[in-house]
Each structure stands twice: as C-alpha cells, then as structure tokens.
Image (cartoon, rainbow, N blue to C red; front, side):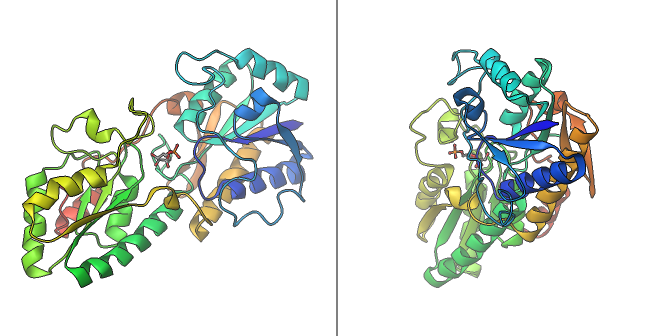
Length: 352
Ligand code: F6P
C-alpha cells in the first residue's frame, strides 16, 4: 500500500502531529509506504514529493506549522484562481505515476472540496479537518482551534491590564473568517466585556452605551471582535479585509472600522489590535496535540479498512467519519441559540 499525504490551506498548530500519527500508524499497522506531498495540492502539480518514514516524522509532534509546507490558493481544478485552468488530469497522471493507492488530505473546507472532487475522479481520499476557525461542518472540533483560543485569551488578558492602566477601550480583532467561534470562546475565557461576532450584526449605539457605562463604573473596556463581524446593515466594504473578499487590498480590519465608529461616541481613547497570524503560529496546546494524534490515527485506520470518500470528525468525545460530500463547500457558524452565547448574555457581556 502506497499512501500520499498533504497539508492544504492556511497552516495551523497540530498539522505535524497529524502527519506523524498518520505516518507511524500506516507504517506500524499496515506496513505501508508513505509519501509526503509538498505545499498542498501544488506539490501534485509541481511534482514535489518526498518519502516519509519513522525518522522523518520523529520529534515533530510539538512543532507548529507543517513540515510539508502548504499553499492556500492552489486548487488544481482552477489553477490559479477563478477562471484558472483545470489541471486535475495532470494531477491524476502524476498520482498514477507515483503509484499512490490513496491520499490523506489534511485541510479546511477548501481542501475538503478539492479532495471530494478528486475522490469523484477515482482517487481514494480520506480527509482530516484542520482549521483554527473551527468552522468545518459535521465535526464538533477541528484541531488548531484550541491553540488559537489560547493565544487570543492570553492577548485579551494582556490588553485588559493596559486598558485598565490607561482608562482606554481596547479592541482585539481575531481571525475566524465568517464564523465567530474563536472570538466567542476566547472572549469568554479572557473575560472580554464586549464580544462581537459575524453571526450577530452589532448595533454601534448599543456597544457605545455599554462602553459609556463602563467608563463610569470600571473606567475601561475590552472588546473582542471577530474579523467577519459587521454592523447592522453593514456593507461588504466593511468586510473588505477578508481573504476571499473581492478587494485585493484587504483594507484595514473590522477592529479599525469599529475604532473609528466608536471614538466619536466616547470620551475615553479607543485603540485597536489585530492579532493576525500570531493566532496560527507556534506550538499546539496539549489538547490539540492529542486531538491531532487521534484524528491522524483514525485516518490511518480508515485507509487500512479502505473506507474512502470521508473526513475524520469528532462527535462528542468519539472519533468518527462523515462523507466528504456533506462537508465540501459548507461552513459551520455559531448558531444563535448556542449555549455559550446564552452564557455570555447571562453574564452581561455585550454582544452588540
Ligand atoms: O482559515 C484560517 C484563517 O487563518 C482565517 O481565520 C483567516 O481569515 C485566513 O485564514 C487568513 O488567511 P491568509 O493567511 O491567507 O491571510
């Protein structure tokens, strides 16, 4: 058995832990040959591969990033970008040349969509859900999310002490694309006073009123806002910073927009911090190391049992799998009746 493995899309803590688990389990339990594909699907177009053995994956569990490299715009079905050429036949030729029996794709929704299309072309695939955004369908968790939440929580705590000292309103903008999972969990863990999510368009006057009340009572406010958040009736321009927005300049961020909206309404100074890729870098938390290892092991088992066309998933505390067709091209946002939203409301956190 000869298995290819690649990491696609944006990087995320825990990728190496999955690569290690898949490789070790396939070698130990199936005697498989494992080939690493470099820079995501780009490696299958540019013919960049390398053998993975026990030695290559030793000592990488705790490392951030991906030893294989990744690329988040390399879709062989439209190479590069919308309207790009369909190079999937070229990829299939190379897969046959390599003698790959199956592919393990570690990635987010974009990679799962590509994986699904290759599965339909006859290449057996198993997917492993990766993203700090935690926005993949039919899995309770993706690895990388816990690590990102830990970074943002720490940042909120640090910003709280300086906001307190200076009597400021500090805005911290998180990643998460069109979902608010990171901002919600980290906002609660870091005790943010205001949490703004894409799922609940905010009312600027309600946010300002909350800050004014705190100006009098506590003297400072910490606001945690997800990058995809927008005001009630907000236009696409407000979201122009998102990676797949039509605006190639990615103007500012919603944190800056909020700062400009709030400043004229308050007497205290308003400052904004965009955490950016700090949330994606560095070592995975213990939780993510364990989850990534469990996902990798489960993926190897699916390969061994020749159960393809699915993505590993977490249901409660159980590793399971879901059809790639159910995951491809879909995202999981925070439902309006989510218990964490209710808890935040109950604690008096302003949700806009
Ligand atoms: O999907 C992960 C993520 O980090 C998002 O939270 C963010 O919007 C995007 O990727 C950033 O992508 P890039 O690294 O291409 O700017």
